[in-house]
Length: 128
Image 1: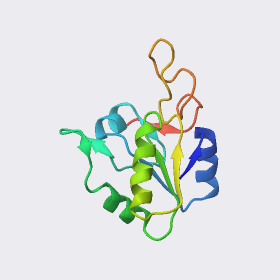
Image 2: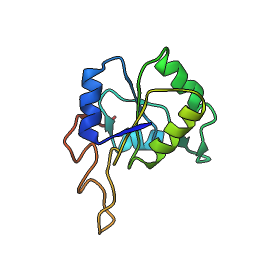
Image 3: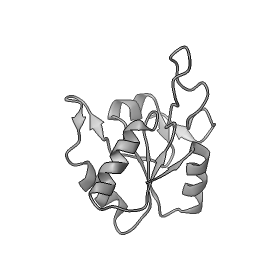
Image 4: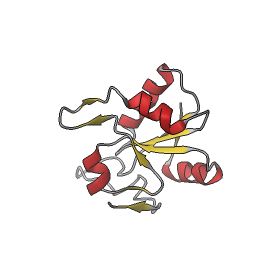
């Protein structure tokens, strides 16, 4: 798995329109916090049980079809890295993780969106 800073991921997605951009956060995060434009939601972990989605790999395989690059994003880059490892363990290749994720790392005051991440970098996003 390769890792991209958010701006690098955006440039990669622009240069590779066949790539599939997957937001692995929960449905509630995707809807209420917002999400990168062009991403599709396939939760890695979701409510109500907050367990790993047993259909995650199957859904990603279907979304990626044949040999498309897969770019993963979550809130901070941790869940998407775990999801990427699961995909690699299932035999998928060409996996990319967005470091710092959509909201970025926590700052000294325990807030996000203050020094890195997709939204902090001003990249396109929407709120459903």
